[in-house]
Length: 167
Ligand SMILES: Nc1ncnc2c1ncn2[C@@H]1O[C@H](COP(=O)(O)OP(=O)(O)OP(=O)(O)O)[C@@H](O)[C@H]1O
Ligand SMILES: [Mg+2]
Image (tube, rainbow, N blue to C red; front, side):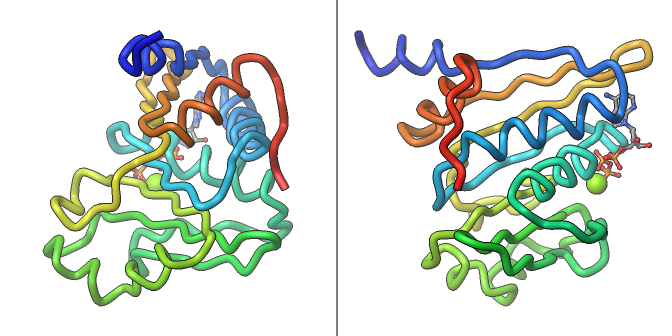
């Protein structure tokens, strides 16, 4: 099997009927993650990126509320076994600001990095292991989850066949 055909297999799709379904998909994704991992959450305003992040954080062991990092750009979560950094780059003035947010330090840790609006980070973005696309439908959302690295493929394939890795 070539790498390209392998990549084509690492693609998971699901229709999300309501907010609860988005939260549950986040929790399911959390269960298959292998840190360090970089996750891009893509989709327009209101697509459900923060909702999916809440599910992810819940699945990774966070028990409190999850603030949208729209104004702070990044919210850290001191979780075990891996810290989680939840970014929202919507209001990033310039991609070079990412340098001042400690991104380099976070990449040196065995962390889970979640990015809303990764497109706004330009050339300063770390490559994604997993890319999630959320698209509004009539009332729900369509989710497509793609592995974009060997690590990402492994996670998404586990999602397909239901193997949990985390913690
Ligand atoms: N599957 C779903 N079906 C219907 N509504 C949903 C679904 N998932 C999330 N929502 C709702 O969509 C709204 C917007 O969600 P959310 O804030 O997560 O979007 P977002 O992509 O983070 O937006 P932004 O780009 O502004 O940060 C919320 O009211 C949430 O409850
Ligand atoms: Mg959001």
